[in-house]
Figure (cartoon, rainbow, N blue to C red):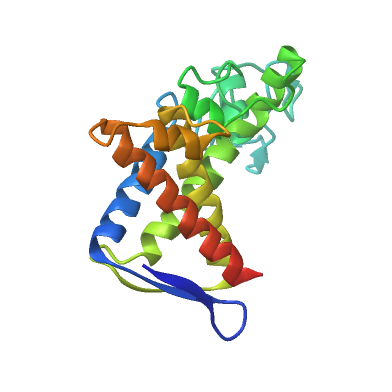
Length: 222
């Protein structure tokens, strides 16, 4: 890989060999898959968009609301009434997710950490409101890398905004890989102590390479 260099404006450029591009794209794709919520309904299913409007007595759309809300003629708008969103619908509209529990997968939990480590209830409530949007934001950064990194290697030219997405995606890959490898602050010592035939040795080398790519990009942006 040729190191990242600043271009005119706030952009940067670099060049990746084919094996490097294939490797990085594979790691990025794995993070996208890891961040995919298996419990999220597919687009177009009930609860993923606003409920359709129900015409009022005068032909104008009647206001809708949760259970107990009052319609234009004073009628109660109960769940199940056409045009009335359920609690699940409202939570989906607000990007709220599931139970608010932290992911069981340690790597995913590292990417989606609790906001309040000493207050599980507050952490769970915060997670319900923010986890889906955080997943989506991280996946979007990853997709920007996939969109700008040639599958067979070659030059990469990034705007300042795209470069920031690359930094976020690279950081996520390193976090996830670091958890899988059990990397600690003594990474160099861990790596040196590995037997060259240990399967983890190659993975540690990849981890170190990702750090070099990240550092190169940071230096080009500063």
